[in-house]
Image 1 (cartoon, rainbow, N blue to C red):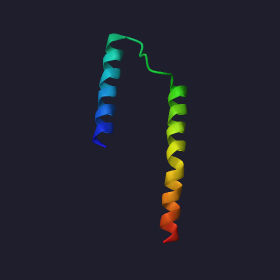
Image 2: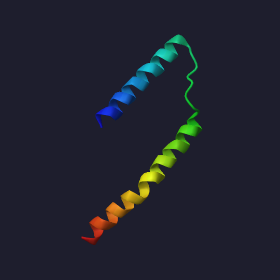
Image 3: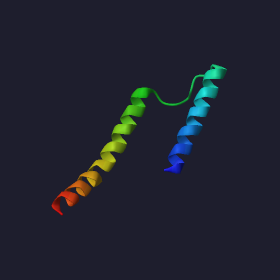
Image 4: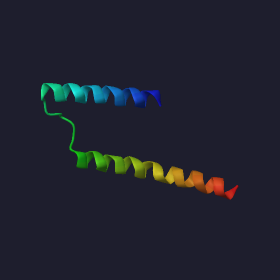
Length: 58
């Protein structure tokens, strides 16, 4: 979890610096990021459903 928080903090810092320097970010568009989020969610959905089903079966 610590790695995620550090990554988020560094990303925000770089975003602020880019904004101060008026530089356009080379990051993908918001639509691409939403698609990536959907892919990650789908990747973990089956494991999550299995976990929930196991807890219900107990």
